[in-house]
Length: 350
Ligand SMILES: Cc1cc2nc3c(=O)[nH]c(=O)nc-3n(C[C@H](O)[C@H](O)[C@H](O)COP(=O)(O)O)c2cc1C
Image (cartoon, rainbow, N blue to C red; front, side, top):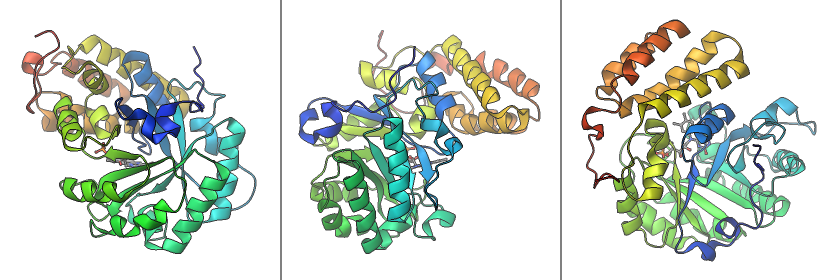
């Protein structure tokens, strides 16, 4: 079945920030090179997925002609099994306009701006997390986005570049525009993906934002979700990235409110589907093996000895070798007693 990839225009959960006070809405985080179509569709074929996904960024480019290959990941011509929000990365308002128009031509009424990517190659050039460092350019990007996607433009940011109070200081700029959402990854760009999320700074910053806020950062378990929801009762939108890669059953726990039984056969079927789709996309075994390894650098945390398993998978040189190691690992899934190392409260069937 082919689902409509356009973000539902009339979904109150997206466009009307106040309409979702009770309900929770969960996004798949954009993760370049990982949460692409092959992974999204394979996940949707075997697991319950979050409500929607923000697709990994597409960089803006000079010129008016949009190469179809650039849009392949979000194109409705290709099967999309989960509602999508395409994301743009750039610093030039004219270039942004061209890309947003291409999204609109594909049927999208929603798009997101990446203003949080911390990689030096990106941020040092004033894109991603470097964009808010130049408030004038940032303002023009937000203005262009809101004009092109009325009611459907959002931005994904961090608490700051090198200090967690910088986004708070910039909030008047974000509040000038009719953004439909602001996703805040509760870290600074300098932290990259390590170190603790700063919940105190998130609380202070979110309180200054007049737009619906999406919480992002280290939501790995049902326990995290419960804790975060209790701590931020005003937040009803959540974004999960590495948590879902580590544990593909995560959204099922979040939806059920208890730990659902883990099932090795479903995990195996997902891995097969993902491998086949990646092979179909990339053809050659080498990039496919690379993709599988990248996924396993997260997924190994669902297994009893993550570091050991990751080391074994990392050393695989062929797909056959990889398949053998994975079949062996799946024989030991789920980890002893089916329970994670982290604290949790109750199995669904307990
Ligand atoms: C490998 C990788 C790729 C990422 N790609 C993107 C991206 O394309 N766009 C974006 O806004 N954030 C990107 N992120 C950041 C994630 O969307 C998310 O903010 C981050 O992983 C924190 O959330 P988590 O703790 O739930 O994983 C990426 C992160 C990683 C680790």
